[in-house]
Image (tube, rainbow, N blue to C red):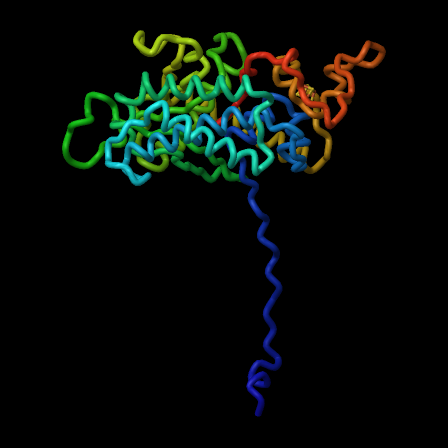
Amino acid sequence: MAIWENFEGLHVPLQPPTPVRPRFSLTSDILSYRKCPRQYRYFGNDGFVPARSTQAFYGQIIHQVLDRCHRLYRGLLGRPLGTLATDEDLAAFFLEVRNALRSHGIRAANDDVADQAEEVVKNFNAIEGPALYPRVHDTEFRLERNREDYVLRGVVDVIARQEDVTRIAGPLDPGTMEIWDYKGSKRIGRATADWKNYEWQMLVYAELYRLRTGTFPARAIVYFMNELEGVSRQKGRPQSATLDVNITDERVSEALVRFDADAHAIMKHRVDGNWPLPSAPPDTDTCNVCDVRYSCPTMNPPGTEPTYRIRNPFERPGRAGRRRAVAPGAIG
Ligand code: SF4
């Protein structure tokens, strides 16, 4: 008797397919959607690749070079533990990361943008490195949380011990840790939407951290890297470079409600295919580097002279038209 005949007459009922829960990143989904739903539709949802990933370049090069500085200090790059990167190390890291990004089609808008990123990273390394690197516990720390019908994800740039507990022996207390997020932009005004978005982002990170460790972090700090452009290293950190986000249960709950609303809005647009225009136009820098600006009703209202001319796709920006780097939006 053949083996299969033992199973003759056995009926296994079909299992209904388990729906895949969408995953939303705090920065590349929720904050991008919040900045402009139309732009998010093309590049965040449909998967088009921006012709010039100028905003991605600025954020990624800063994050990746700083990550190398942290790893160098931790003795992971073939040098002794506690090695602080020099300006020469930084220049080498910068070239390495720039070439790697270029191979993925991510380029600086022009050399001035790359120079600016290199300058602010060098200044950060000189001003913050000696005090910050010894306190760093982890970098690129991934956090996730199951929501009712989706998964929320975030990556914290740095988890650092608080200064006053650096030398305390014994197990680390998660309640004494700081979470840091690097922004490749200047400090923005308190009344702006981006300010609120940055606060919400850190409050949600604080909640994700609490779910993983059982307690909120001691501090949540946003670091505006472009505040270090042209500063004197001897004078130390400019006051405007950091935003210390106040973490309370109430503020965290409010932030989660807002993020839930945006996640559900994205899910709804995915089903009905109807992506709205932003209720208020994003900042000019965002629209200036947006590939779908030529057909955008926000920037080119019917009956008016188009704000943008169609650019020859092979045109390269001339030196005369160069300007200092844009303040990229939500990064990291
Ligand atoms: S041009 Fe501006 S408003 Fe229009 S889709 Fe692009 S970012 Fe959004």
